[in-house]
Image (cartoon, rainbow, N blue to C red; front, side):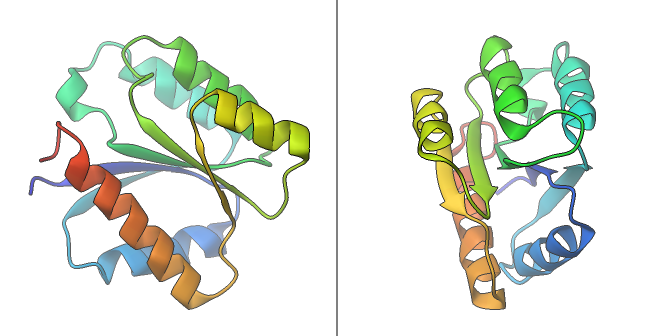
Length: 139
């Protein structure tokens, strides 16, 4: 497998650190991009526009509640960008309203509760790697 490129949009550095460790434990190669707020995620989207499709992330892990711009706004930006709308987006949060959950589903995101323990981070890392293995750009 080629190196999987994963974008994590998360404002909690501890969660990013634990997820990075969980990804390393999967034993697969990956490149991790980090955006710590919604504005950085939008800047990332703009920077990806002109890059070849096979260099785009194979998956985006997106926190719903972010500083500056929330996860729904970031997800909309991904879905509105023709060269990026194919990317699988996994949205995680400690809590989403029924309206937010419905909107996430409508936009084709995979909604998951935010991990609270190490084994849940391991499970999430396994899901992200599995998504990347199914991605045509990585397989």
